[in-house]
Amino acid sequence: MEEIAKQIRRDIVKQVYHAKSGHPGGSLSIADILAVLYFKEMNVDVNNPKKEDRDRLVLSKGHCAPALYATLALKGFFKEEELDSFRKVDGILQGHPDMKKIPGVDMTTGSLGQGLSAANGMAIAGKLDNKDYRVYAILGDGEIEEGQIWEAAMTATKYKLDNLCVIVDNNNLQIDGTIEDVINPYPIDEKFKSFGFNVININGNNLEEIEKSLEEAKKCKGMPTAIIAKTIKGKGVSFMENKVEWHGKAPNEEEYKLAIKELGGQEDE
Image (cartoon, rainbow, N blue to C red):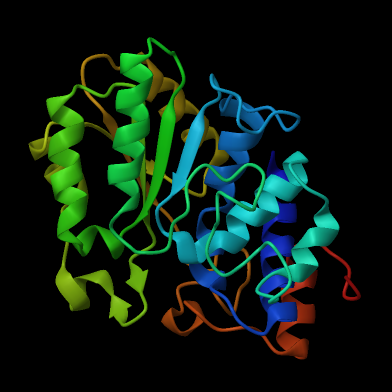
């Protein structure tokens, strides 16, 4: 699993470097979470991406698409060569995920604050259809400053969506600085508790803790779960870690080679 997460990180850096644009910081922070979800936890079928009984993932923080694309390619939803088309006009992998064009993408996202509402709809549909699939929604900690998130949180508890698992990527940085300096959402765990969620706090870059939290979430009945995942923005690349400037910036050639080397790859990747 560790090597899978490293490969996801290498492919994130590769995409952003070749596109000369993108969001590496928040993509790198969720690599471990996506590795566990797609290679350990979620029931998905690369040969039937729209299978009715599949588990679903909504990447509400859609600007971190490089992480999702790298994961889907590694899982086998499309060829890894497709990653070279990231943000290219004639490619399917645009700056935000598109469910109509990309195999394995369950929801088109990008407008921050809206993903949890979409995930609620999927979870409610599962309840109505007596399906046992689970729905996962990855939110940014800056994103939860959006009011719609909390309207959706109330909806999730009203309908007792125990098939819904929210994962907050708490890397503490957004485009304009720390989340405390912009609009402070802390304490995040207590807020979700007050909205009726089962809350689990973890180190979101620790694979074992991620696995255990997802198992715990499945056992919780009668209410949705929110996993508050404390992560490091830019995780795995020394000069990107905890640096707000890497929220949405592409590395130059020297930085790219160094990043790939630190992630265990070859300089000529």
